Length: 67
Image (cartoon, rainbow, N blue to C red; front, side):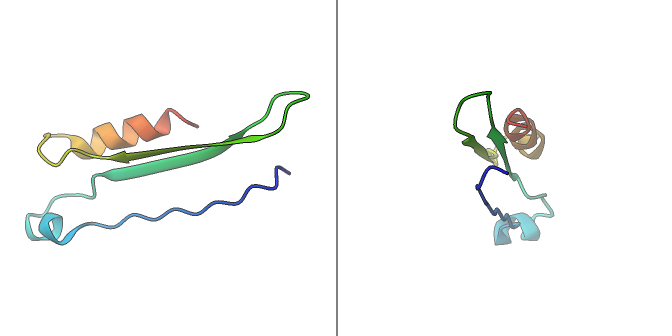
């Protein structure tokens, strides 16, 4: 057990709801441990660029690399 606790949340903004766009934010968090070292909490947060065609996919990909 690492002793770390974390929480995250995301929500679709009002302009995205009005334009039927998906939530373009993503996050991931993990604890990395190495033998003989203290655990390290690593977090990634990505705010998709609303002007990009696949901003949701890019944000998801970027944050998934932390796992």
